[in-house]
Image 1 (tube, rainbow, N blue to C red):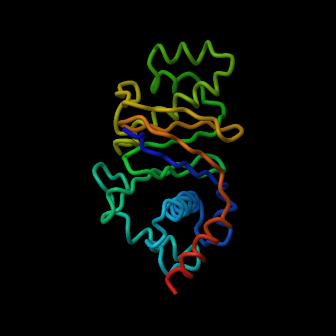
Image 2 (image 1 turned 60 degrees about the horizontal axis):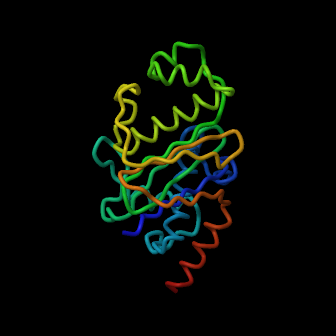
Length: 214
């Protein structure tokens, strides 16, 4: 049986949103959704964005297509065979696009605040793993991204104890960006393709889609 493919697109938030009015966290979310739009175009579903010329119009169309599924996880009402998950941290956004439910998280590698957060979120074995690591901050970020991706797979968010998570059938960590780490997971093994993207690719894809329907 052929393994499902997951395409992960990453992008710099300030570059993808420089012409938008969104501020703060809305800008982070907008970057992720624009990366989703690029994924839709490149998986042959650009017709969902038909008529959009500007990124603000793309965001409006995606808003109209998206609902909150079980546990509040965003999904497409009319297109359950298109699955996605969005994450952002520091100056980057990311979006995984695939055909099966998935959980994605990226984390900027940075110092954690004291031992209290370790004790609250990590098992004793994980705490030892972090403290004995030659790079504790990287190890902590890897484990945090793993846990976040697992709760995002189900959509439960941080409502569950991070010490008591069930490991899904498949997960894969990655260090695609300098000073960042990430994790992608699903209920079956997948082929993963990761790339950093620029807004010009989405602009070009939207132009092709408009010409196709002229």
